[in-house]
Length: 609
Image (cartoon, rainbow, N blue to C red; front, top):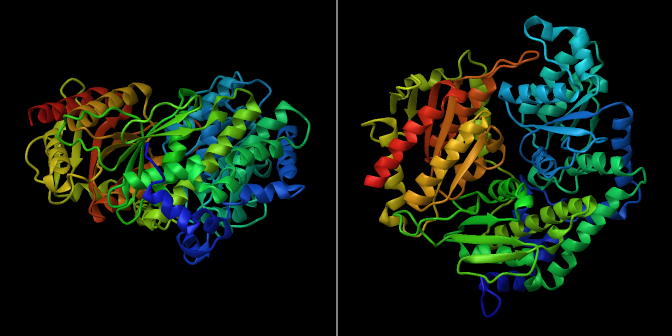
């Protein structure tokens, strides 16, 4: 956003010395960065403290070498939200992804769908050149021992109440016992003292390590990278296989800290790119809410979900926040199109491009580097920079960026539903329900609508009418809105491609609004805070199939998955959000035609208006 001088938001940050407040953990920054009276700002200077310590980073490298020397070649990293998001970024960028021989392969696991476990089992078996036996043969101790002998599961929780990793560890521990392998040699837990996962680890006598190297607890999950073991251990697993020399992790962090240059942000905030982007977002916002349409160089696209979680989980509170999307073209002639409350941010690694209206070019020249250590440092620099932008936006809009209180509602509901024989039983008594059947596949589906929505016509027509009413109301002419489609459970690529195409036609072309396609339950730990309590102008369609895969190995059901799908929908309704639940009577694999029918009818209604 080209201007003649510092914007009013930037002037405010300079006048208040906001970056220094953040570093010194004082003033309004200390208030906004606290949860239940406890400061959660260890992440701000975390890298600098690690660099000042002569031994702790080398200790993580030692831990990584010991894992390799024990014969571990496959690591299942089980966690949700900030406990795993940085790990997924690293693997998607090619670090510990199985592409390079002689490296540990990390498999991120952030789903309660048995299909996610099956996919990891298949990949490990393929890497070991093992054929997966069928039926009872899959529980053969000799086979399990061969399959799992070089596998480690790392269970991580940076929150107190996350339970998904416990279900994964329970499943894996049972398999280890069947295989005659000692669980203590194949498990590692990293969590907060007194958390649900910590209690589980103590009961199981599983080895554990602190998340912060100093044992502190002042780092929220979404700020876990690059100063906690969530980033440091995967990075060390990668780096120690490149070279046996110690100090590589230190070199990466030193390079990242220098490129981030927090001293520059403190002394000359107007010149720092991540201070500038925070001010630009604040200037573009309407009533504290802003849509961030983000474009990165293609190779760096895996950073988008991490930035999305950071912004939405931290800032989505009290109707305010930053909602993050992949860059997408919105139809300016559509009835729901608004240019207000929107900023297009283009991350550029080369020469700056001309800025257009409602746009900002974020210069990150280090993203152009190709060497592995440079790329790893660039990831860490990006993490640090966006964290600064998040905190400064929170400061400008007076948003408490520590904590995520809204999500505790659905977690409590999910615990109740998991104890029932059928978590979907509660949906059978919902009054605002309508159904349809797709004739080609014969698959039926029901749509549960928010209370107050008129149930007249097919599910698609009801959904389309709600979209039009929500995004074309004249009283909302400035508010930044969006459409969310959340699929509970794993989806095959064919279904994902079809849904993505339908979603962009519906939102971008016919309504002129941005859209996001989420994968749950992972999304419930990354962006649900914002959907429940952030910018209020959204319509969310949650999808759940009744049928799911049986686990290839061991015992793992879809009960938790179904409970999460229902509990999050219930919590959204209670919060007054426009949220629908679409339940498919079959498997998601067979839902391409039903989805096509549903969205074709939606687009027909929107096209005719």
